[in-house]
Length: 282
Image (tube, rainbow, N blue to C red; front, side):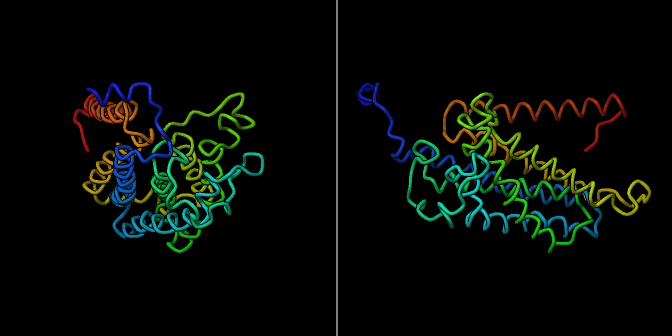
């Protein structure tokens, strides 16, 4: 009681380590990283047996390539000091994460900058991995790794800077000063970004051979699909609640919404199938 009374009216030093927030964000980062192996299972179960290792390796390959690119120059492009009138950050300001290993509070109060960097790296990884589902059975592994490195550099990092890194759509940006973007957990930077990229790649590469003609083009392992969906849902608690960058009431609200919205959607789909087909399926 005495301690709480003494703390009333005291300002929190944003440069002082917040152990609770740091512990939560480390856990949230691990949860988001788990989503990429989950996505590998999800996509792996949806393709034919002959393609399962290829599509799963595309997710795992994204983990390797994107993490290294992010550490070398990707983080600087996305969250470095603003340059080119809000288009990108400066990739040379913290090249290879120099000068950031012990700093605290640069991006969130009480949070070590390295924790923030790691959390954002997992977002970049899952965004690239999401695209792979749109090119299933049509891309070799080597070219995919090259695409992952180029896309996270030329597309993901600049758009992350526009919205989250203080760029043109940020509160002080050229556009954002009049109409700033609101993206709490990646609706634009992750989902629209990956969706548009997937659509463009699908249009360029065309359909799979035998698509809508060959009866053998069907998911080869539905338990893989359900396992992957479960891991994605589990990881999304870190994805959404962790986007608050703090262990507080807003994080709790995001966590609960992630549970209730997905549960309601699951029940809604089962009901629709029951009405449409007479029985619910996986």
